[in-house]
Image (cartoon, rainbow, N blue to C red; front, side, top):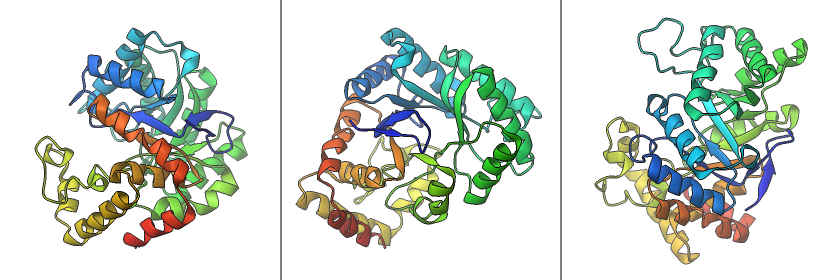
Length: 320
């Protein structure tokens, strides 16, 4: 496993990491989470991603319990969570916001569920157009100063919003955002490859990218319809179903699956390796509903070692 600096910060994260979105609390309980975390850790993964909103806090609780049962030392792993959506329905100031009141209380709730004194990485899960960015930057900087988080960043913010937050922090001598967590895969490329391009050098932005398999579409499992138990069959994932109905996209997936076969690998591992091949990506976050699936996807480490510019360009041409 390769370890990369998170942008220009000093902390290093594993090339592939493990996240709990969708699965923890819906498909994975504490027992299975413990097995998955152990498998990832044994493969060299040191970074584990979560969010307050995942299963309304249950995902954080499950991950915290699993880590406690595994007996990991706190210095052995990097853990993140994300704040914005809130889990207290109908409570003013505590949902869909990055105001100071919410952030200062939400971090305490996350730490309690995780059973930790601090998280290594803390993300603003979405931008908040109703709260001044300056208020959010001050709150995040104060959370870092309190020791409840070590680094902060953003998730799915646009380039202008990230730059504005960074410049406010720079002018006020506050802790700056150092990382962004966008969706990045062969189907969604523009934000990472075009919109953020100036931020890597100008701000030293690091990326921990999510959804590398486009919610499973890039595995090829949907080319003949929606399998029972797949993500597209779950309620609340209509965005996956819509992609499955896109005949042109499915045809591109078929071509991609054929390339993977020619290269002697699976489409999932090839898609993951392609994502990790981008030098601006510090870590690619994997998700899995079983230990076998996680171990299979971690095989992308070997595929990445064989990736070349020619192979990358051939793959990209399929989706252009």
